[in-house]
Image (tube, rainbow, N blue to C red; front, side, top):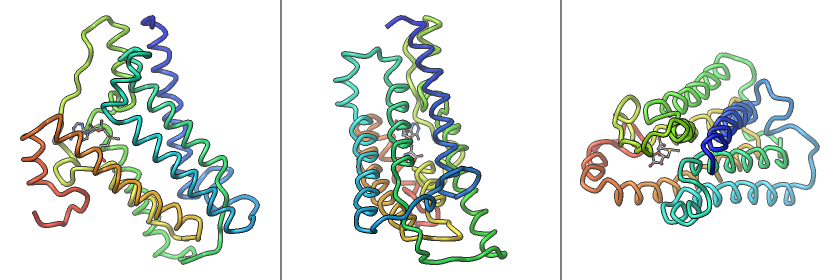
Amino acid sequence: MGRFIVLVHGVVAYIVVLAVFTYFAGFVADVGVPRAIDDGPVGPWPRALAIDLALVAGFALQHSVMARPWFKRIWTVFIHESAERSTYVLLASLQLALMMWAWQPLPSPIWQLGDGVLAGLVQFVAALGWGLVLVSTFAVDHFHLFGLRQAVCHWLGGPAYEPEFRVRGPYRLVRHPIMLGFLIAFWAAPTMSVGHLGFALAMTAYVLVALELEERDLRAQHGAHYHGYAAQIPRLNPFARR
Ligand SMILES: C[S@@+](CC[C@H](N)C(=O)[O-])C[C@H]1O[C@@H](n2cnc3c(N)ncnc32)[C@H](O)[C@@H]1O
């Protein structure tokens, strides 16, 4: 693949990822988007639930399979290494966009905190969750995570960029602050509908499985270093005792 094509592909993928993720935050929090998780025409609940669970499963499957080292080895035969991460995040974003577009609302409330102080507090906690996701991407390597660094390094003709294992910022508190941030943002809802609850439960199940798979890869990749890190820093709960 030509360097310029890899660069343009990396830049486009990065812009799409930022746009889809920003919309996703609004979709889950029901803030500032034309159609959020509880909006739209309501159909029969068994059909809606089946579609929603299939959408989350599709996202989870694609995200998990494409992130595995064995899959990367196969598809970098067809696609340049420097474009691998951008392609992965681009396809994951498009899958996320499809999930939001095809989402079937189930708006009956499980809990509703109204507009008072408690609701504001819960909304603030959700915002902290999204903030934790963003800050953690920078703690690990934001531009590498979204494939832009690899594309720019290739454009400049330098050696392939090797990511470092980093233990800084939120990674000193938990091993998976990005996933912790998502979980906080998914569950901290002033209004929890049946659809939102189904989404939060399905995503939580996916995150727990995804972390198992990621940790297996990290242990294989970093060996004793990761074992030592895991022995000192809890997985998701910063208050867990080691
Ligand atoms: C979407 S990120 C999620 C990282 C982590 N699971 C979290 O929730 O914060 C996944 C990528 O981060 C990498 N990664 C995870 N922990 C890391 C660390 N401490 N330093 C560098 N890369 C890390 C993994 O190898 C994987 O490529």
